[in-house]
Every structure is written in structure tokens, then in C-alpha cells.
Amino acid sequence: MKILLVEDHADSRRNLQRLIERRGHAVVAVASAEEAEAALRAQTFAFLILDWMLPGKSGVELCREIRAQEGGDEMFILLVTARADTEDLQLALEAGANDYLTKPLDLGLLNVRLSVAERQIRDLSERNHARAALLESARKMTNILENTTDGFFAVDEDWKFTYLNPEAEVLLERNRDELIGAKLWDKLPDLKGSLFDANYRKVMAEQVAVEFEASAADGKNWFEVHAYPSGNGVSVFFRDITERKRNEGERLTTSKLESLGTLAGGIAHDLNNILTVISGNIGLAQTETPSDCGNVLSFLSRAGQAAQHAAHLSSQLLTFSKGGAPLKKIVSVSQLLEHSAEFSLYGSNLRADIEIATDLWKAEVDAGQIEQVVNALMLNAREAMPHGGTVLLCARNVELDGNGTLLLPAGRYLKVTIADRGPGIREEMMTKIFDPYFTTKPAASGLGLAISYSIIKKHEGLLHLDKTSPEGSNFAFYLPASDRKLAVGDQKENGRQYQFNHQRVLVMDDEAAIRELTSQLLGTLGYEVTAVPDGLEAIRTYERALRRGENFQAVILDATVRGGLGGVATIERLRGMDPDVNAIICSGYSDEAALSEFLNYGFRGALPKPFTRTELAEALKRTLEQPVNRRHEAVEH
Image (tube, rainbow, N blue to C red; front, side):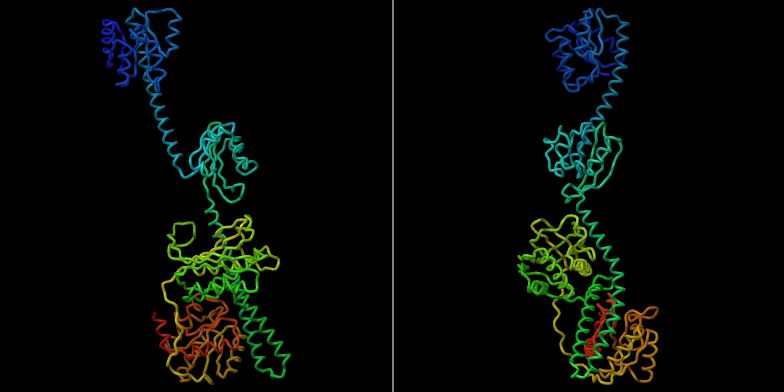
């Protein structure tokens, strides 16, 4: 142990130094307070033996000054004095001496005092180390709190702020100088009566930690909060989770749409089968009705229009069903948007202000479905501005890195924004606007935004409410950009010319009414028809015809057969026996693979249900006119 001895009498200094060094301690001996101060500046001592009477500054004064310095209480001070009266000794202790020794020195008493001092110094050293470790820990903790991305604040038992970090200043929008020492409820009165209030008081009263999520008073921002008892007060960690809550809402919306889509797809499939029979029989009735029966033809025409309206509703259901895949092709999105916006606002008291980047990228989309999205968003804008105004439609190119808040992978996208100047969307409505059948309009179906959300999702994009305020709402949707060129019109092929009359057609459908109807419609068009109920029977029938040399010029296959072989599996078997088989896929459930990419599966055409006599005739005409080698090229690619 290093000891500083301060004694102005040379002989006494030498004797004391020798006695102390015999106990194994290192001693630095000086003659004055000024020399002692210089030694203390140069090195650290655990023990100071200090004579009261010194030339110049007294030992009591030096003791008092040492104790007043930072870290001055970390040294053990033994004051040596010739004064023995109680008042002087009391003065020594008040100056900060740990112990005292009176002159003349008694060697036995000196050794006792040194032994006591050694024990106390060991205890003091341990306390100093513990305090230093505690201070270092507090420094590190303060450093962590000052630099963490979470907000943190602490209040005492009187709810007064004792600390808050820089992130808390940002989240609370308050300066720490304004808050430290002030009461929480006075500075943040909006918290009174809220979930924050209830949980903070619970922590204070019950001394238990609480974790919860809550929104700010304005409902715009959400926070995740961890509050716990600290001393007699409360400490709080909190972070802004607004984006996470928004993403969770979008995921929930997606889940709801997928669940409804499963149901809607099944309903639409059955409905389309029924509508096929209705529309087809109306068409047959129209062909059989004499031209002079005007009233009957008028009735049939209106019935046909109603059936087409029902078919449109069914197609909307299919749009967000699991089987409702878009039939994509490369289009000029700028032209598509301009046309859609003008058509949607035709006859209304709104006008469209269109700002489209001149270098807007191309995209591979189902033009009809994107028109449906624009129409739904424009209709939403019309309802938001019943007294008229301007709707702003903007389209630009964006590149996403995949690390933002949007639930989209990295890549190039077209961002389309449609902004109205209505009253905005209330906070409680924002999580419901994409829910199926949710609407605030008595005459609305509530499907517009839900279907639009599903359409964009099936285009591998995203539709969301970009922002809303009392000045208006902005909806934005993203579509993946494509480097492919615009498709040019099909050139006429100099292939084989077909005479359609008396061509043989094989029809496969598990619904007896549809088989009968299709056969009748084809019969009126001059075809010879064979109808079968499933894929296995179609394969057997086709094979028998091949052996007899009575080939079918076309095959119409239903995509979905309950309990049997469907269209996709059947075409694989048929192509195995006849690579030139001329097949059309037909379905009331827009199968993602079969209808949208029929060429890749060996089909030469697609016929969605419900279909009319004219649509059936056109599908066969296009298919039979197409040379075989085009089909082979598509399948190979």
C-alpha cells in the first residue's frame, strides 16, 4: 500500500517513515502541505498521514480541501496532532479525517491505529472498486440509452421526468430540457384516461412490469410499450410500430380475400355452368324464332342481356378467387390509364388531371382487369367529391430495393397514384376499406376495392392507401415493369384452309346440360358432335376415331371434372397419341394455368364459361384457322 506522510519535523518524519515501512508499505514523505499537493497530483495514495501543524497551510485545511475534491473521499486520512482537547479533535473529524493520533506518539498505539487503518482501507478500496464498477455500468447504460433506436424515459414516484433519451424526444415531440423535472400528466395531457395512463399507474401501484400496444390520441401512430418499476418510479421503453401495424392489416386483408376467394371461385364456377346453359338456350331460341315475332325476340334479347350482366358479376367473383388468373399481355400502360380514366369519369361532374411520365415503362397486364381497378378507384373519387372537382392521376417509374415498408420484392415498378380532394377516410375505416362487402354507401356492393386489391396482387403488385387527410385521399398501386416489347397484331398465316361445315368435334364436360347445349349449338353451326362426360371417355373415343381414320378436327375439354380426369390431364394423354390434336380448354373457373397460359399446355384456344353461340363459333374458327406449327413453337418455348 502506498502511504503519503506529511510531517514538517525531520526526525519525526524519518522515524515514522521507518516504522511504517517495516509493516511492508511504500512511504513517500514530505514536509509541507504544498509538497503533499504536488505528490498527490503526481500519483495516487490510499493512505495519508497528516500532521496538524505545518508551515504555511495547516493539515486541517489540506484535509478539508482534499475531501472537497472529486474522488477526495477515496483516501483514508489519519491526522496527527499535539492537541488533545475534545474541541480540536472534533474539528479534525469535521474536516474529514477518518482517525486521529495525539503526540507524543505511543508506538503501541501507533501500530493499533495502523492496523485499524489497513482494515478500513481494504474495505474502502472494495467500496471504491464497487462504486467505480457501478459508475462504469451506469455510464455504459446511459450510452446505450442515448443511442438506442427505442424511446426511453423514467419518472419518479411523483410522476416527474428524471430522464429521457434523444429518441424519446423525437417520438414525444418534446425537448428533454422542457420535460426533466416536470410532471408526466402536465406535459402529456392526452395520455390521461388512455391505455398508457392505466398501465403506467398499474406499474406504479402493483410494482409489476407491463407490455402493451396502444395508439396515440389522434389514432395515427401505434406504439409498442414495455413499462416496469424502477426504484419508486416507472421506466418505459417504447417504439413506433405504425408501419408494422399497417403491414399486419394488409396481411389480414390478404388472408380475408384468399378465404373469400376460395368460396367465390367455387360459387362462380357453378354459376358459370348454369349461365352457360341459360345463355346458350337463349341463343338457340333466338335462332329458331321467326323474324316476324318481334316481341319474343325482344324478350329473348333482354333475357340475354340479364344473363350477360350475371356473367359479369361472376367474372368479378373469379377475379379474386384462387383460380382467377389475369390473361396478361404487354401493353402501353400510359394509353390504358388515359383511356380508363376518361371512360370512368364520362358523364360525371369530375375531370381528370393526368400526369404520366413520358418514358413510362411497359407492363405485362390483363388490360380489362387494370381498367376495372382504375374504374373502381375513380368511382371511389366520385363518391368522395359529390359536388365535383379534379381527380389527379399520376404514373411514374420507381425502383424498389425490397427493404422498405412496402410488401414487394426488389425490382422495377410502375407506380400509379389516383388522388381525390374529398374529406379523407376516417381512422377507424382505414383497416376495412379493402374488406369484401365493406361500404359506407347504401347502394354500393362493397366489392370494388376488394376486387381491385386482388387484381393487383395477382399481377404481383400492391394496392394500398398511400395517405389520407381532410384534404383528400391518395390510392397507389404498383405493377411490375417488363422489358418485353409490345405484341404486334397476328399476321395472317398461309396455312391450311379449313372448310368448317361437317367438321367433327369432340366435346368433354361432366355437366349433362352443358354437353347437350354445346352439341346443339355446334349442330346449328354445321359441326358433327360427339359428347362424353369425362377425360377417360374422351381419350377412348379419340383413340377409336384415330384407328378408324375418322379423326376429330377439334376437341373441347372442360378444365374441371368432379371425380374424373380434367382437361389438362386429358390433353397430355391425347398429345401422346396425336401430337397434332387441336384442343380448346373450357372452364367456368378461370384456372390459373389452363386458361391464362393455354398454349403452354398444348391447347390451341381457350373458351371461358359462360359463352354464347357466337363466342363458341369464334373460338373454333380461330383455332381451326391456326396452323399446327404455331402450336408446336409455343409448347417448345
